[in-house]
Image (cartoon, rainbow, N blue to C red; front, side, top):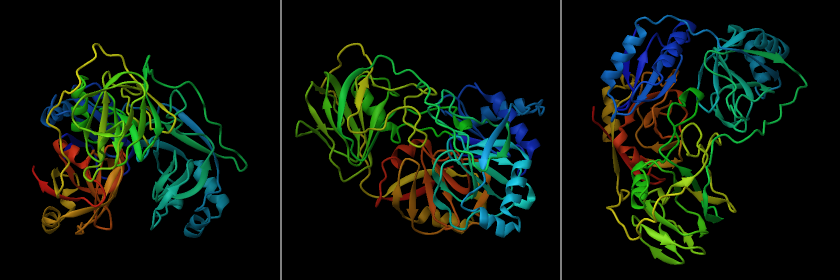
Length: 513
């Protein structure tokens, strides 16, 4: 079978089977993904159990054109994707939920360890967090439900089970699976030249090591090339959260890596234009309360966006205008009442290792870029000419009232009734908390026939709804796979607005298919 489902205005799903865990269907999904690599306009391919999320650049191609290519690739498709490798992972079976799993299954902890380690598992997909492998299928005797209330933090390297699945948490993160042990081999290590141990299509065997210890981190050479950067700024105080971001990574969903990149790309591009950089050059993304910086070498700078104001040597300085600095100058970014993020550009662009084609900081994985800390240095890349100070363009101003975000129907839109859709579009939602992963919203609840699905790729801008009935808007650092219904997806042209929303702001959604 082949069907197509909406994933927004810059993504769609190729559906190859029923919503279930099926090795044959997943093999076809993985084979199709490998055949589509390198197709003009495709920016990422995120394989799930039974479908493939295809993200694309609307400036280069269209969904209808890509659907034709998918059908052509699928027509002669044979299930030829053989398991690439067998990976052996030692486990110490002493997890926090082991006794509760014993109670639920009627099996002793030793029997649980034996049954779990007797089976060979397939890596169906990577997602949720970088390097998290969805492994199946678990022996039916070990099938247990997820935790009724997910943990706020599941320890790194936890081996866990849920339903017919098992997996390893590569890093500390929220999670609802039941922990039965600890992996003694790192499935994700950003210090390795190849950070990800597992790939889709691999097979995994667990071996019980009752007294084993976690292997040491690799501490290998740093990936990427930072070039010969010029020391430009010294960090005196780090501020709330500042990190280097460009336009983000492409074609990394297979590893469970998010796109990263500037959440308000319009402001980042504006700041770069003011100093004469290419639009996608790396800028410093500054959130709500900025750093204090000392200038080390002459440079041309510009700031655009919201969330902070700008002070140069103790005096207010304008946004959206280029300005020159000299050694010893001091930059401060006090809190501003509107917006969430500003972008500092330097002529030439900030320098950082180029990892998977981007200099962006992935805050969850630690890959690439740089998150500011006191004592750190920021480098810039060489540029021809000095540029011109005092150059100004019309700035983008963050909204001061309710922001309206245009959406298209999401992949599970049919799980929501017409009355739920009316509520969704008529209601005003308040941002209760948020970060680069997403924004939690409070307001009218949305009723669905069901809220959980078999995990699938999650487009940037998805509006997902869990059993609480409250929507959550997912941004660039979202988990690439998820198991909640998605009622809608914010259109690409409005994502920059979402990047400027902060706690206490209000937002509305308007359907524009």
